[in-house]
Each structure stands twice: as structure tokens, then as C-alpha cells.
Image (cartoon, rainbow, N blue to C red; front, side, top):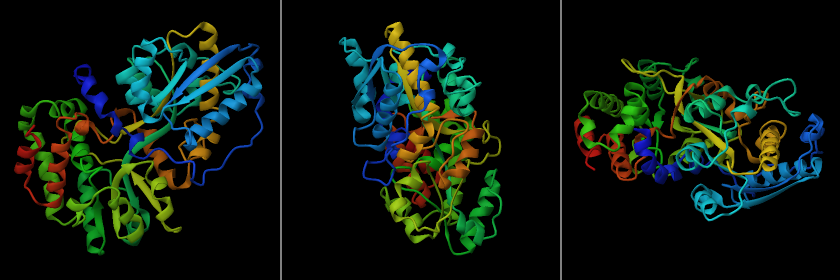
Length: 442
């Protein structure tokens, strides 16, 4: 099924995790770097001399903090390795689509980065197998292998997506989960996050009785509640089938999931203006009005709304709960990262230098990259932003990967129809039965 869907998914990947707000502009408050070059940046510390020119095509735009951080990493690396030259081409998000045709035309590209879902769907046949490199130690990893130096969930994601192989260096991890106003939870006496659907409904009722809106969403993320419930209940493959086969919506479990969301709407747990919420209204209302308790979004959310978030606002987050009779628990979720891959046709000298640079960016320079771009570090020893501290335990607990916002939005032919039906279901305009009929009308 995943192979059959690859073409449909490729077109939809513009709505992948990072495209929904992972990038920060150069005008933000991220610090610039003037840190000295670490001796560990030099491959010479391991007794090897690097000599290559690396042509690196990136998915960041040249004014974004992520691009500035990569350039700083390259400057440090080149200073420590005089035989290496690193040239960047910053293509923005179109990079995922440009690399394949450029390589086919004979363009010299050594390294390239993209969201890892795009790497899988678009570059699988173009990239170098890094499995052996992941088992090696480096000057920047001390006595650990590279694999032991990065977040287990990010390493396991690579293995899951590429049949046990490691094919990219992960960086800038991201996750999609339930974000909450922790201040509202504390005021309502909620001291533990819900882990089951019934517990979540009890939390919603408590929050509603206290005069707050339990849940909001908007046009950009409106499939989240339905998609997560369906995937918990049926599994990702079954949800992938729904988006390409309208007849699959006759499965009784689809109606069961819709009825759970219908009950939420009938109980008054959704924002009464939910059907009219155009992105980014919901997330701005959450921090400005401070009367909304929960919103499913990505780890980029606190950064996106930082300019309008009160200083005393407390971010909390937790994994989508389990549902009765479901096939997945809270170890499964929407998460991903960016990845740095190497052209499989690069020369041995280029591969060696590219591996050393990829390791350097995601270990020694990892914290600096995270600080400069308001991102999450990928190294096991990284210090997370305070407003994402609780997301750390959620991401570290994931062992099974869903695509961003679940597979419910991955097909361009059905995505908008399903999204519109989700908003109407949460707004109470249609019943669960009507939702199934409308969402499958593609």
C-alpha cells in the first residue's frame, strides 16, 4: 500500500511537519554564533585527512535561521578541515522536488536535506547507505557510536522507513501531539495527563465546567482529532486505504470513530467557532485569549506564536490517548525530522567528508543549531527549549511512526473533502453518519 501511495503522498508532502511552521525567519530573536571551532570538528583528530568539495543542496531559504546555522557549521568545519570546501544552494521547500531532476541532468550534488518523509518518497533510490557509518565512533561522539549519540526515536524512524537501513543524518526533530495551556489544567485541578479516551473526556468535562473551552482547531489542522482517533483504532495502513478507496469508509470502525468525535461536539467540548476558524486564528486565540485548553499541533507551535504569547503562559503537551479496542497505544504518533542525505554516486573522498560533516552538524554542532534556529536538538545530551520540555518525553516514547497529521490528509484528491467534513463534524453541523457519507465522496 505504501508503494502504491508514494506518488500521491509526494504531492501532499508540502503539508509535512516542517511545512506547517517549522521554519523561522532570520528576523527572529535566535542568536548568531561566534563560538570558536571545536578541535573535535576536525576529522584529523581521528587520524584521517579530508579532501573534497561538497555541494550541499538545502531545503531552507538562505535567510532562515536554519540556513544561517548550517552555514556557521560549515564555516567551523572548513576551518578545522582545510582540505574541505562546502558550497550551499538554498532552494527552500522546493528542494525536495529539484534534487532528483538536477541529478538526472548531471548536476554535481554531494549532500541534500529535506523532511524525512520526502527523503523516503522522493529520494530513496538516490542516496547513500549510511548503516555502517552509524555504527562508527567519531571525534565528536567520544566513546559512543553515532547511533548511540542521537535520539533513539529518530534513529528508529530511519530504520523503520528504510527497511532497517540508516540513510540520512536526522536533525531538527518534530512531533505532532496535544498541546495544552498548563495553567488551565492546574487551575482545574488536573494533575496528570489523560492516557485513555475516557480520561480525556473527563478532562474535557472538568475544563468545560470551569468555564473554559476544552479544544480548538482550525482549517490547517482540522483532520487531527478524527485522524488520530482513526489511526489509534484501525492502524495507519487502514487509514491510508481510506484516502484512496471510498468504499473503505463502510468499515464500522470508521463510524465508531466519527461517533466519538460527534459526542465531543454534542458535549460542547469544541470551540463554538471551530467551523469558522481559519489558520492561524485558533493558535493565536489560544495564547492571546488564554481561554482554550487544548489544540493538536506540532512542536513548532510555541515558536510560531512566541510574539503574542504572554510571558507567564505555561505550555504542556501529551500524546494522543489510547482508544478502546484500538490497535495502537501512545508509543505510536506523528513525528519526523529533517534529514541530511548523501548522493550515492558521490566519490569516496566526497562520501568520507560528507559523513564527517553530517556527524558534526548533528552532534558537536547540534545544540548550537537548535539554539540558533529555535529547534529541538537531536543528540541525546541536547538541552531542549523550556516550552518544549514535556514534548521531549512524548517524542522519546515514540517507536511507531505516523506521518504528520496522520495519513488522512496524504492524498490530494480526497484531502480537502475529508478536511471539510471533519470541521463540520466537530462543529456539530453534521452527524457521524453524514460525516462518513461526505468524507468518502471523492
